[in-house]
Length: 483
Ligand SMILES: Nc1ncnc2c1ncn2[C@@H]1O[C@H](COP(=O)(O)OP(=O)(O)OP(=O)(O)O)[C@@H](O)[C@H]1O
Ligand SMILES: [Mg+2]
Image 1 (cartoon, rainbow, N blue to C red):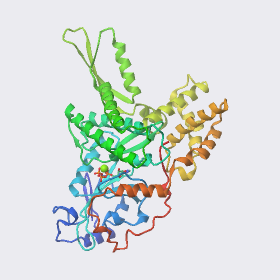
Image 2 (cartoon, rainbow, N blue to C red):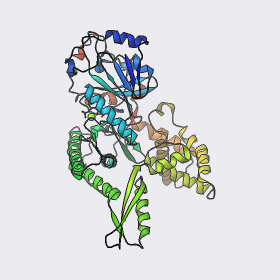
Image 3 (cartoon, rainbow, N blue to C red):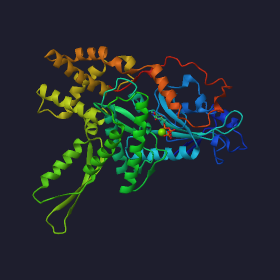
Image 4 (cartoon, rainbow, N blue to C red):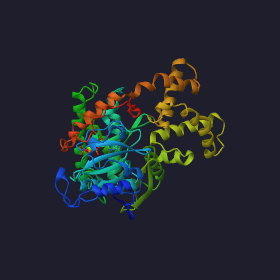
């Protein structure tokens, strides 16, 4: 087996497992089996930015759809054409997607570029090529990404505890993602809810790109390219919502076409707020500050302002160069070291402000108050998350929900409620409702697999003993759905 880092090439032939795999690989290089191209390498090769030795111990010589259950994490997946599985690799969970080598390598590189640009995408781990089964037949390559913790595919969000505005909130998150991708020149080419993962972010969602297979990075995108991408998104999403609707998963009063149109409207409005050139009179410079503040409120940072005078010299043209979303989350990170979503950060910063005022520390440095707030307020609260839920809810989301719940309790009681009491009540009454159990996840994943178009039949013969294991009660199965 070869292990290639992007900077250098290491051949780890000394490893027994890798040697065994090298020996298992045929030297003749039979081409064509299972859609694998002829230039597929003859030995198993893992190309990755950093090494995780546990990767060498995985059963690469078996088709992904037959990997043993004890390696798999039972977490919900979205619909896909390819076989995708979540695999425990040491302490990590990786998403593995079985695809042809060219596609895997291309998607890996694209994801790496998008990560470098600080965009919300899944994190690429590596590409595994040169796979062969025991009889020497070539197998497809595998793209490995890190499982995006706490994320949910949209169908899981609709599976239960639905809040009536869930579809709208997902669309709003997707509009932000589209704007961010288009700003850096990324043309997606296959936008759909299935190609996005959602993270709960206070009362909203944040969308992450999960499938970059059809994408392309350009210097900049033309208006035509952007419009085409949005048009495709709209059509796909209307179709996906109609599909949910026919499965009785969409609330009756949601109009699929209206939601599809909303995406395009939200996108355009955000795009113009971020990129329009405005002109101001010489005595209207305060309006520039107002515009920057508005961009910050939307979560975007302004790197520089491009200013030009009009030809008659009477007005100033101003165009902001927006760098990135994450204004509040960067501020919170600086103050507390907490790395959370944008709306969660806003919520936590507000609570920090309230704490500062209520403890008469208005004149104290915010950094010092923040340390205090972490110790006295935030940490004791999130430490109360029951252990069985810790892998299921982000501490910042838990904290946000507790604040909401406390407010709700106080309103009902007509007086303030102590934090501990609010946490207890939340854990007893709200938390259990959000759980998807093992059966829910299995149903979602069976639906997700029904879209797989790979030639799996040859892999499912089960002659190697794989693929027949009963699904056990995997604790990972408890995942979170939306309200
Ligand atoms: N890193 C990851 N973290 C969490 N979930 C993931 C990850 N990678 C893939 N998934 C899940 O697997 C699903 C399928 O992945 P993906 O869309 O890349 O497959 P695909 O076969 O290329 O899809 P398509 O049919 O659009 O070509 C996603 O919708 C998502 O739910
Ligand atoms: Mg996909």
